[in-house]
Amino acid sequence: MTTLCRISLLYVLTIVFAFAAIATLALAARIGIAQESSHASAAVPQQTTRPIVLRVSTLLDGRGHTQRDTSILIEHGKIVRVAPSPEMSAADAQVYDLRGLTVMPGWIDVHEHISWHFGPDGRLAGEDVGKNETPAHAFFAVAANAWATIQAGFTTIQSVGSPDDVPLRDAIARGEVPGPRILTAVRPLAGRGPKTGTPDEIRKFIDEDKAMGADLIKIFASASIRQGGTPTLSQEQLDAACGEAKKDGLRTLVHAYGVSVKQAVNAGCTQIEHGTLMPDSDMQLMAERHVFFDPQAGLVFQNYFDHEKNYLGIGGYTPEGFAAMHKVWPDDDAMFKKAVQTPGLVVVFGTDAVAGAFGHQADEFVYRVERGGMTPMQALVSANYSAAESLRMEKQIGSIAPGLDADIIAVSGDPLADINAVRRVAFVMKGGVIYKNTVSERPAGVAPVADRF
Image (cartoon, rainbow, N blue to C red):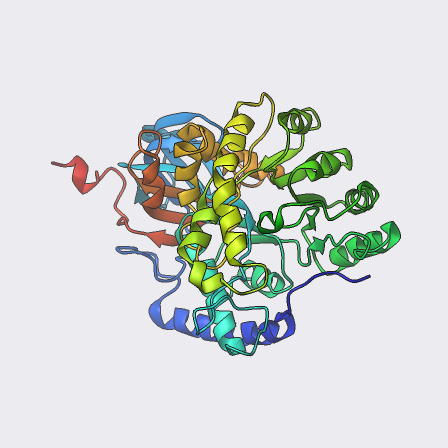
């Protein structure tokens, strides 16, 4: 079976990651990775074996509720207790006073391409790897994407997919490289009509992806919107792909436009991406079948337009393709608003972040509110509980509640009053480890400077 794929740096990156991990750990040892005080933005993750207490004035729990004047007790990377501040105490606890900020669960982006980056020449790298960059440059560019992503408040992402995601996912999980928790599709199944393969060949491809360590299966059931979004897989092929993934215990995320949306839903696929050009009835069908929907409200469009010169002339990035994206964006806005208004349809947060977008993923919240018709709370929940549910991880992440991982962020300002506050991330914790902190650690009971005057 043949399939469209990018030339992979998988094996080279595996070696480079090993050396980079040693360098990272050596650097961390020199500058104090485990130090327990924090009076500036964390240059490296801050770890501690002591209990941690977060003092919070405004808490968004990730499920649409707001709590006031609470404290969060964290031990061994888990949330142990959430209670009113006067009732919270822990012996030898390290206390961080986040009062005056808005605290919420770490954000989840269900659609990224973390390995996409620009080469030394400023052009999109990857199609002809080695021509314009060294493997070391590629590693540091991808590692920079991971760092920018967690600094922006995203503690879990789903990268869909490239074999290059695997060594990064595993290095982050081992604590060797700082970044968000990553789930990856490894290789996407790229629809090419009959050339994609027979149903049996497709099933074999799915099984191979699982053996390669895929956390989910990514399927291209349509061409890019730059090429008109036409179907690229038959119903029989989609049935085989999503049926085999279900048998293997894997979720399926399907890139689909127009008629391909209904085909994917009928095939039992679990999540639809994009969805432009589909009839309104397909949204109702997704709701009835409990299929998650991830339309993008604007970041992916704006990022391409801002970096047109970096993409133009590479692959399908043609003047005609960019014109098609400009033309379809208003239609995408209309579809997004209808999706938000469709009863029972769970809209989750995915940016489709590619080269140029990393560190700016929170802009998608602003687009969802200002162009997509979501309330600020709806937009935030789409990146918390709803996104976690789509990953089947709602019992681990996506909310602030006892027993869940301590993935917690804080922003300066109130995003429910001004969604632009999501761009001002002041504190990031993943699994109890602090990756960003622009507030000082203070003894319990000492108010922030702003509260003392």
